[in-house]
Length: 315
Image 1: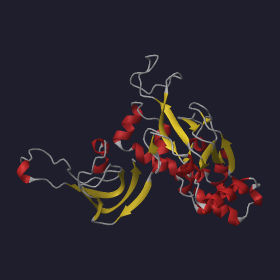
Image 2: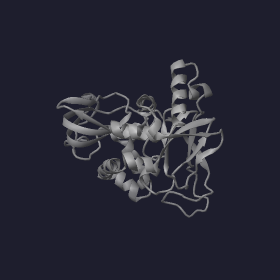
Image 3: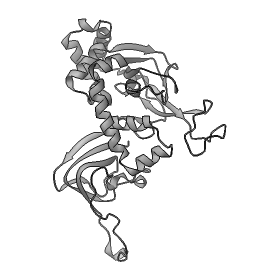
Image 4: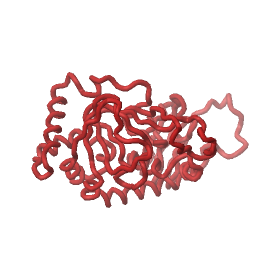
């Protein structure tokens, strides 16, 4: 996705080693994986509570599953199925219609998106190129325990990326029918609220209107937000810390400060860079684009006045 990275995703360089993908060398992990395989062979009503709990132990850290209630999580675990994709084959391709969400049990996949080369037909200039002959590039590699394809559960939009297996890969599968049965309406309302909030941020709405991101990108980003609460005078970000998250304020206010060398700067003649406090859908100072290029660091201390915030990891 153009806007989000699930925690643990890493930029494409080389695929993970087969030993890392399959969890070799860990007896407890091997036993858990074999138990999940056997559970997936059973019909939903024959799966025991202990078997459901074992599956939940494996999938609960996946972003989509983690957003659901315990009863919804167990319902999806009861109906999950298992598929195997051989190395080099595709789970799905960009433009396909889908109705399934996948969690990697063993193996790994590459996420491929159109490269940034100019439109081969020279017809897309200011908008995203959708020409089918545009070459693809590996964006990230996903490993055991990570999920992909969640938008197919929530909309009828075509797939926005191509997924290719980098090794023999086992996948746990959630169908749209199961999602609708156990989580659909509640989770859909939850996402709609998050999407509405994101679109109140000027930079995100501008990117959507100019075609730099799609509605699917914003919906996927909404899935990756983590809510946090801070009491008054709490330090949210410290000057000099690595800038690894974008902080979006839902309620309350932030005061942004920066330590400067008074001997090296002239007296200000205009408004302060950090100006007044911000609240309600604003991005905190750690969210400026210049601070996420090549290991940048936060530029100021941010103190909170009893705020609720949503955090989006950028690495």
